[in-house]
Length: 137
Image 1 (cartoon, one colour):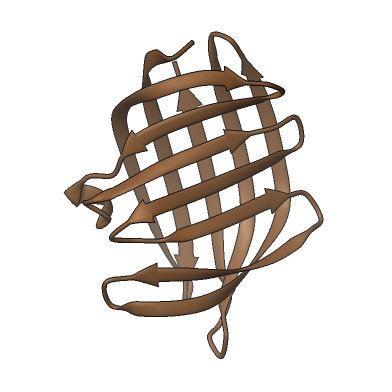
Image 2: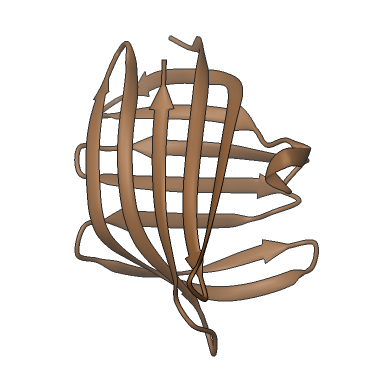
């Protein structure tokens, strides 16, 4: 059963020693599909990904962020693991490696809270340290 929810995504990135924080709140849907919870919302102009639908798949110990539209990616996060993915934007495509340092997940039928710390590195570039806090209520 789909339920409308407020989905808050707060990200903090450290690039070349400079910290940048972005917080977005969107209305979306949240539901359970077999053993996982799924949240879906449309990105806005503020995120720089207008025209993109984001789907977040929340499992007991992992998280997938799937984007389809003007931005296309499938990022997988699981503690202690690294995943390589293609990240395609209107400005070009990159191959990136995501290494998850920390992932805390609380999810039930009422909503979810996720805290994630990871490094993202594109081939030939310095890694970017990221923190993501997801709150669905």
